[in-house]
Amino acid sequence: MRLKKEAMFTCPYCEFSGKRSEVHNHLAENHGDTLGVRVDEFTKHTFYVITCPVCGASYEQVTKKARRDPSFVSEYEYEIRLVVFDLLLYHLQGEHQLGE
Image (cartoon, rainbow, N blue to C red; front, top):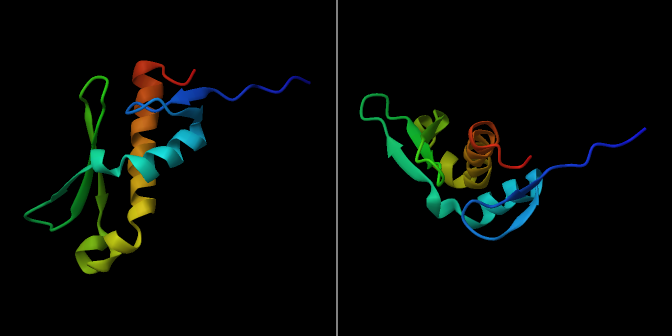
């Protein structure tokens, strides 16, 4: 039985490369400054925004708990970044065939 070789990814912001999980962690640890943040004026929900460095498409991830608990974002900042960068990696795989 032959094992499928895991695809290698290159960070879209620097020269780092590795398995998807390694690049995922690298993005969250080193490139959090590429994320935008906005607060909806009506719902007061906090949204994290990631923009694809290849094509400029933007994606948002809402953090509803931040409205009720202001410490939520600071307490779970790394985990939130992981979720948002996961959106970017899926986009890069699906739209730009990166990591194949």
